[in-house]
Image (cartoon, rainbow, N blue to C red; front, side, top):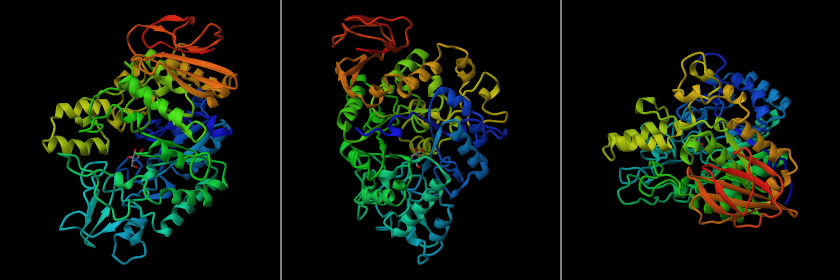
Length: 556
Ligand code: NOJ
């Protein structure tokens, strides 16, 4: 297997709006991030993925970009960005930018021109269609509720927006659009950035003829499956690779909704013609439901989770590279979702992920064991996905408010977006002003300052996980070793081995709040050093009693 720096890295995702506010306006900013580089260096990560910092009217918190070559006013300016990039590099930290090019903001100059008349030069930069029988061109529903089509009175046509109506989809079939995007990417690469995380990149090529999506019984709209993994997506990414990516030593990760293993091997295969790795969503969909999708408080069933994560480990082995994540700005906090919000469970769940093959991503606050927020009332939410779903489903009379609020508490994106908990002072030390979204009230107990003083904290456990991967005598096994799942049907214990050039490590995690008797399914007679455990002094034996949330990795 070819060794690469991005395979040996640990990435930390920053959602700038919620990370650190330097000027008291209640919104995180670039100078706030600069002030925390020492903290990140101490944690040991070597790459930051920065959620969008470009100019934006913030309909979807920066995922609606109105100028790709400028910085959002709330976050600072280009000089602040340049300083951040320089200082991050001085700290040994690379910066990966979010690249949001499936759509722009409706306030982007291309769209303003595109919608101004039916025959202007930018008309075909977006996806415009006539209505059908006095209605939308097809049955597609937007990811943020309602139809994926918006009627434009001026030119009397519809435009496509797979997300909010302020996020019109670009028409990638137009070579001029690709030129514009590739030029813009080159601008950032020439600045010295270190890579791109590509937002919903699997959606840039829509199926010819834009056929209706599958509409289950009782659903209001059809699905968007005919927008993902479309006929030209690989062609366009290969063009991007040739014209931009291959000219720089950067890393790329594509957010690929609806990607299967076979597709992932095309996007991120060892052939190197497209991307380095993808974010897949199979494991984060295992606690969703058929009828209501993510809007449920259903929890994971461990054997399903083990099976799924192991399938990706097994089947990409030697073919493509995995990304490893529990959390990001669209997912609820894993310590609430899979754990019981205790530090012990945070450490256990971190262990499960950080010994797998792939590049791990830590989402801001995950290293502290930050939890879901338990927002209560709808007034406390800010996310467009939640607010639109509330309007459509609750106010539309389809489901009760109680049921939907329970689902938002369990799965809502705002859980990940509450301010980073820096210390126990007002607003968790995030801002001296009024935060744009509520602070999780548990900040007085869960915060960076307290954890930095406690050698037994989640922070130091994550620091050790990262150090083991990046800088230890086990680094090769942890990064490149072959993965094998043990005991697939066990409902409580997640155990597996990693194997590299005759060396082997065993990982055992009791992913439950119960004590579990466990007979090891593997010979441990010659077991060596314990790499890490969340229970002080532990010994490896053939038969063990694993206390709740027990985790360990040991050389065997
Ligand atoms: C995926 C992003 O992660 C999410 O936050 C955003 O709302 C959509 N893409 C639209 O850009």
